[in-house]
Length: 327
Ligand code: SD4
Image (tube, rainbow, N blue to C red; front, side):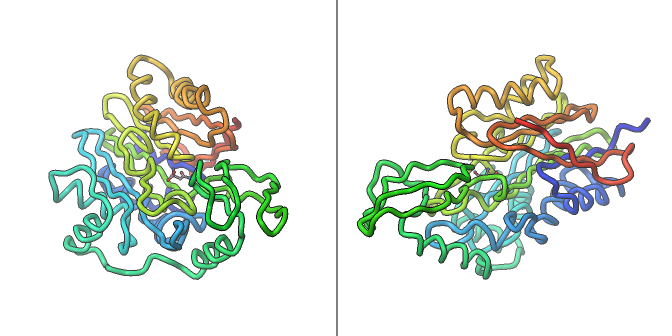
């Protein structure tokens, strides 16, 4: 049976995988297919959270992180905390194609993307992201990413608890307020597509696009644009994509770990589990997942703190299949 092409993506982002598949099945390179797949997710605002219009930061603004990596040349292009430009993965691709840099951040990333022809500057907020932000602002004891500081409103200090859905109480000057913790990164706030494609030639590329963690401090850069953290690829071995609490995950470069473990002989499942357990050992409360694919197209996922799903399309499937991984 034919092994290639193969498309693997975090979460049930079926239309994104179909878009990448259409591209790579027609003969596009793995890099081009990653761009098509991740762009589709940005346009569709997969899950309501990838791309523009989602995950407002503390100021109510959406900022994008994205990365693309070519496993043949080991070239990487990435943008971080990018404002005013909605096309995250295309901006990352332009950094890779038209600059000698690897990662552009903030205003510079936007200016470069616009100078290379992407539409902008534009507002990346949506009615949904603004509503989410206003609701959050109104909640006097808001979960947020600050720690060891007492907010001016008299609440807290709040301890971030990613992915929690439990009801919590906190004492404010107004009395005790009960609220549901909003999962800053959680099962219904996926935020991130990370995709690996093996093209017909057997070449592999990976990419990530995200609007990051909800209510992040402006300027925060997640794992999304960090090569080796949210994604990594090496043609000789395979590729990896990650999703979850980027502030924790980027300390471990889990996708680099997965690819290097596969290089040492681990199967995708073992490599994925090992990478996740290295993080969990130090941060038992972290929420995250990785999906690994080796150069032959074998794939597996591993997760911690939530149930993870990933999507696959290969020549032996009629359409995209979704795989569920339990923690
Ligand atoms: C981040 N990793 O910016 C992203 C968020 C995410 O599922 O993946 N959520 O931390």
